[in-house]
Image 1 (spheres, rainbow, N blue to C red):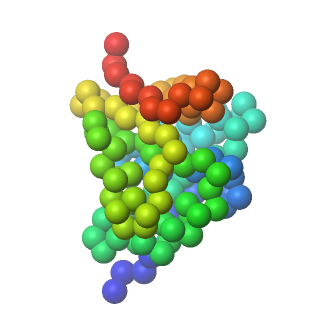
Image 2 (image 1 turned 30 degrees about the vertical axis):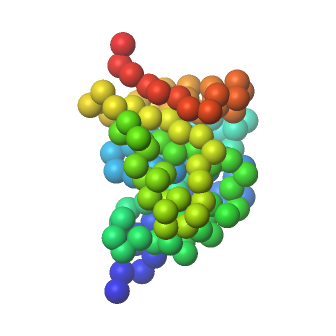
Length: 130
C-alpha cells in the first residue's frame, strides 16, 4: 500500500490563506512563483498531487479543508485535476489558471495569474504563449 505522504505533498505553511493545486511539470514554476508572491505579501502553499490512482482522498481533503482560497493550476484546457479532486472529495476549486498551448508554465505566468485572481477578482485565467 502506498502511503498518502507519497501520493501528495503540501509545500509551504499549512495555514497559508491561498492553496495552489497542481501536478506534473508545473511544480517548479509554482514553487518559484510562490517565492515572488511571498515577496508581494501573498502567502501561499502548494498541494502537489503525485498519484491519481489510488487517489489520496484523505490527504487532499485535509489540505484543502484548511484553505480559504483554492487555485488549480493546470497544463490542460479543462482543469482535469480540479475535476478529479471534486469527484473524489466533493471540494471545488475557487479559481483556475490553465495553459494548453503545449508549453510549460513559467514562474512569471504563475505569479501574474495568482495576482490577477487575488487583486482583480478574476475567476479563471487562461495563459498562452504570445
